[in-house]
Image (cartoon, rainbow, N blue to C red; front, side, top):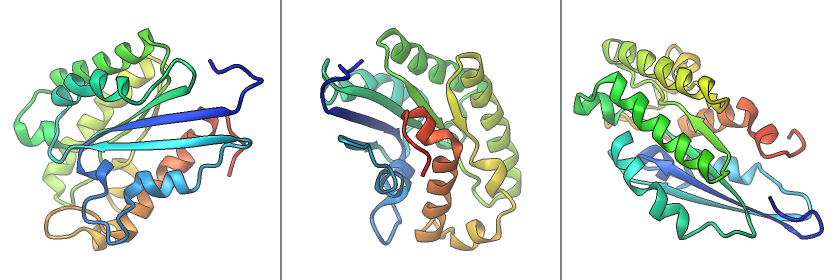
Amino acid sequence: MVDSGTVRDVRICVVGDELVAGVGDPRALGWTGRVAARTEVPSGRLTVFPLGVPGEGTAAMVARVDAETARRFTPDTDNRLVIGLGTADLAAGSSLARSRLSLANVLDYARARSVPCFVVGPPPSGDPAFDERVAELTAGFADVCQRRSVRFVDCCGPLVLHDQWHADLGADGLPGQSGYGLLAWLVLHGGWHTWLDLPQD
């Protein structure tokens, strides 16, 4: 915890896949850039590190979290971890149990180091059959977070029948400017400011 007499220096590492990196966004912001732009730390400083790896599944994410955060966190900063989950596990044929375990490992790693976590679930793909599996994966991730009292944002449920989301998806299944804006809205209204101990926007 940062001493109350010093300037609050918040550092947020955001690990995940291409959605964290904002791939396909004409404005090159993704949801992470939009959320950061709407987050103000009074009398302090905010640094957001989008650490997305296209096509990354949860097991690979676990393998790099320590190295990624160690390079950016310091003992004197307010360190936080955001986990942006995608659907790579489904495409790779990973079991739900394995995906749940990987997320649990990341959350337990962060808790052992007193790093608060915020988890963003995978959005729908536009394929109804595949999205049934995304919904199942989302429920599994949500349960892992609930058991650990970690904030979780469901992106599948609110967007699976959302016309604007589906209209914005490209042939590659990635959202454009409007889609990333919707993801940012869900994050900002999913307890983001409360998690950061900030006034509501």
